[in-house]
Length: 330
Ligand SMILES: [Mn+2]
Image (tube, rainbow, N blue to C red; front, side, top):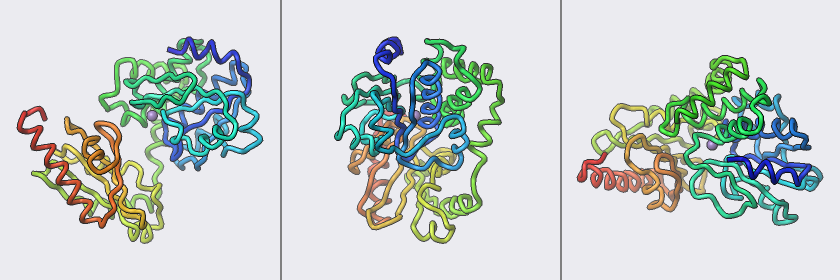
């Protein structure tokens, strides 16, 4: 999987590794573990991200410093590697740096339909996470190089991208990778899980409570809708960044096939996150609304108002669910 990448890396010396904007556990975990691997193998490395690292992942920065891209450091690099995203715009200002002064770029990722914008791509759609791919890089090259810090970083991305090893993207190989990371890293699962998942602030929980009280069910309790408004953020002193993971709550209701979180936060319109835990393909819903994504997770914008956005989404969803019922494949 990484043979060609390892061979081609030998032509470079200073590597800039970018993770995607609005960072999550998988992109930060894979960035940290990859940077440590590169350094162990003689490269000079910088890790870049445009955005702040979320509070529950900030402990990973002690394993590798992640900085905002700065002209002198970026221009020093003779190679870029982007992780956990497959289109240049996912990496924020990376796109502008490339326009100004193009460098060769390698990509390592697991999202479908990669753009053809990279000099070398390790794109494995059925990998659970980019961290599972970085684990394979270590495993193929020299597994002895997995130390405790890189193991925890990779384990973080595997559990955050798989709902703690529950999704259908998890394969025996994913479990084997996680087990090997626990063994080599000499840590216990709770040491990572507590930092990543049990690290909520009280305002975040108050916002969640307000959002939970908005849940409505449609189409014989098969579609759940949850909303977050600007007033809720103001009331609880929270921001949009505090809504991460909210959509999984309506999705967890018995019998629900798809859930939608609608965020009405400014005059730009309504931002929608769609999730499915059945054969319902929310990518189809999102596309009808002008957005896109994957079968089980997609996003779209609606010009509003909120009631109209709910109405339109439920209409599209109901249509698909009844079509699936007709051929009883649901
Ligand atoms: Mn990922």
